[in-house]
Image 1 (tube, rainbow, N blue to C red):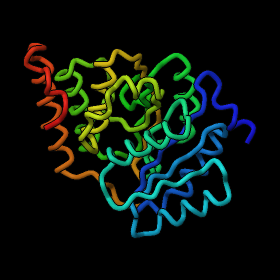
Image 2: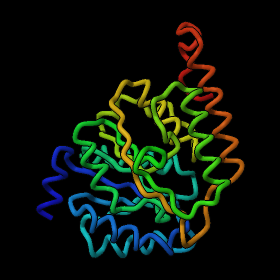
Image 3: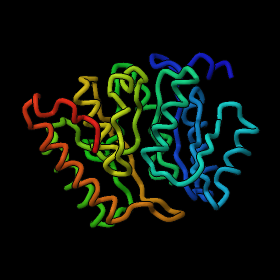
Length: 257
C-alpha cells in the first residue's frame, strides 16, 4: 500500500481502466498480471453487467486487494462509454493518469512499465502495434491488413502523426483529458480510439508511441464486427472533411450530431 500511495515516479497516481463484458475467462489473469507488472498502480474493472459473472469475479478480487476496484454499469453500453465512465471515476478519486487496457489478454500487462516510463515526459502514450520494435502475434492476415490500412487511412484523413490511432493500450494524463474536451465524444469501438487520438492532436498535447507486443485473444469471443469497422470508416471520413473546412464553418459543430 505504501508504494501505491506514493504513485508512479514522474507520473503520480495511476488507474488502469479495464472495461469488461463477458470476460470471466480472462479478467482474473489480466488483473493479476497488471498487479505484478506495476505494483504501484490501481485497477478499475468497469463491468457492463456481464451475464457470465465477470462483475462478481471482479468483486472477489477487490475484496482481497485494496488496489482493485469495480465500477458496475447497468448494461452493455459500448467500449467508449465504459472508458469515459472510468475516466470520470479516476477524476473523482484524485488520480493523475489513467491507462486504457483490454480485458481479453491482447495487451500484455508486462508492457505497462514501458508505457508509464514514457508518460514521465508525455501527455498521451499509445502502445503501438505499428512502430519499430512492436510485434503482432497470431493475428490472421485479414485482421493485419484491416488494421494497417485503417490506421493509414486515419493518419492521412485526419493529418495526425500517429501510427496506431485505433490502438487501445494507452496512458492519458488527467490534464490531457481535460484539454481534449471529452464532452464531445460520442463514438465507440475502433472510432472511439481514433476520436481520442484526434482530440489529443487538436488539443496540442504531447503524444508518443511505444512499441508493444499484441496477441490475439486465446479465450472468449471478439467484440469486433463489420458494423464497428463501417462506423469507424464513416466517422473518420466525416471528421477529415470537417477538419478541412474553414474555421467559420466548423464553429458550433464540434459535437458529433
